[in-house]
Amino acid sequence: MRANCFAGRNSVEVRDVPDPSLLSRRDAIVRVTSTAVCGSDLHLVDGYVPSMQDGDVLGHEFMGEVVEVGSGISGDTLRVGDRVVVPFPIACGSCNACAAEMYSCCENSNPNAAIAEKMFGHPVAGIFGYSHLTGGYAGGQAEYVRVPFADVGPLKIESDLTDEQVLFLSDILPTGWMGAEMCDIRSSDVVAVWGAGPVGQFAMDSARVLGAHEVIAIDREPYRLEMAAAAGHTTINFDDTDVRTRLLELTGGRGPDKCIDAVGLEATHGSASLQTYDRVKQAVRSETDRPHALRQAILSCRSGGTVSVIGVYGGFIDKFPAGAWMNRSLTLRTGQAHVHRYLEPLLRRIEAGELDPTRVITHRLSLEEAPHAFDIFKNKQENCEKVVLTP
Amino acid sequence: MDMLATTTVRREPSDVYDFWHDFANLPRFMTHLDSVVETGPNATHWTATAPFGQVVEWDAETTEDVPGSSIAWRSVGESLVPNQGKVWFVPAPGGQGTEVHVVLAYHLPGGAIGKAAAKYFGEEPHQQLDDDLRRFKQVMETGEVVRSDGAPWGKRARHEFPQRAAQPLSADERAEVFAS
Ligand SMILES: NC(=O)c1ccc[n+]([C@@H]2O[C@H](COP(=O)([O-])OP(=O)(O)OC[C@H]3O[C@@H](n4cnc5c(N)ncnc54)[C@H](O)[C@@H]3O)[C@@H](O)[C@H]2O)c1
Ligand SMILES: [Zn+2]
Ligand SMILES: [Zn+2]
Image (cartoon, rainbow over all chains, first blue to last red):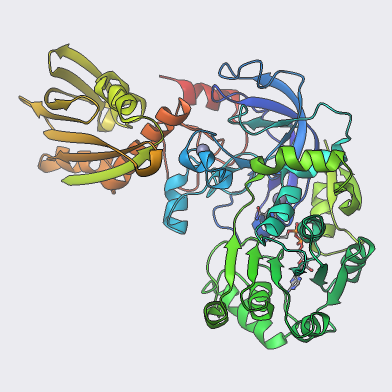
């Protein structure tokens, strides 16, 4: 089959690879009908997540049709022919983490748990197409995918919603939603969201659905800010505006009650000196992540507020504003999205028209065009916000 | 060499005890064990793969057996690698299942064989025991040892990097993975 593979730092290639087959009793094989490129893929390809190998099949946002199931899957959970969306974390459904609905911390789904444990202190779940640290699972930017624990993850789509309406249940819609949910939003809350990428856009929409008084989008890409404005959110361009000052102006000097970091470890900075400091440290690997958005979110947040981090970090950061965090009673919450938790409730919200995931799609390309898709998404060309690929 | 490892399994202590008490189950998750066969009351015969395809065998006796709670064993008679072990099961707080605590002790022989054995059992024997327990937990909680494209070997896990690329196995690789 054809699959989009990691081909060394800054490079992906669509290659011929073997078709997947069942390896475990609770596996299913899914024929992919739609898949997408995510900001997380950029972190992998740009070389910021360790343990990527040449030939790794990328992609963790995908859906399709079940074409084969293992002997451990009973017919009332999943059958050949079912149309499914697959959550990006792989979860066993029976460990204590899964029982607590902390699916992205599943204790059993990562065969490389020992390595993850060395890096993170405790292991993390397996993730499709997301380095060997999270298991070394082939991903979904491919014609077919092997889905382990297929009796736990896949959500059956029985209505006539289109792929584009439900595809993002695999990751970015639940991720944005969880970012807002972690803020425990009250009706008086002003919520500021760093990053107007697809994840940030969904965090903004979710914050509004959860009742925020106002939602503010922060980015530097005019077309991304326009997209947020078109959805009814207030915008700040950090290229030409001092973010903290503007946030104070917009909140009567209080600062946003809740702040969401939807940028992660490749943040850029308006201040050249801090940007240079972090770039140099990152280049010599004494700091692995560039945390500008996180720092700014912590410094901007109102005392007693919450900073919710859904942007991905992989290693270590410098100049963490621990003083602001501690002295001003801030709450820091984070996690890879526990996608399984949100599948049913968010599907219902899509059906009810409360959330429109299709609004971020700017490009529809074939799987063969994946390298081009990565290029325009990463370099913000052709006003690219979100690419959907079809095999 | 003495090692202690622990894990928590989301099953009742009696289930976890029963599974371990059937020594024939141990090779399902312990990398080096090929088989454990019951040979009499409190008596077992163990077979492990050793370096260069050699097979190491020994007899063991069960020295402690408290249903639902603990099991201990030790090798008897002539053995290349005299060893003993104990496992005990403690209810985890708040209905989270069972804490499994394992102690293993073995004496490596001297000379060239000892060196080869040490190498085979790993630079980090403690890591191996941890990994064995991780697989034990996988089997108890999910029914089998977890496999990915990059690490498809199940209990014959090889942790060296680089691994296989994370892409589906060819027919030949599949055959190799599922051989034996
Ligand atoms: N927690 C999870 O489960 C999860 C799931 C999916 C994605 N993510 C992460 O979410 C983040 C966003 O994903 P995406 O797909 O939207 O990526 P993206 O790259 O499209 O979006 C990031 C945006 O942040 C902007 N940005 C850069 N520096 C900034 C700064 N200092 N202040 C404000 N904005 C800044 C960029 O211009 C860009 O528009 C990534 O880190 C991704 O890995 C996390
Ligand atoms: Zn993603
Ligand atoms: Zn689990």
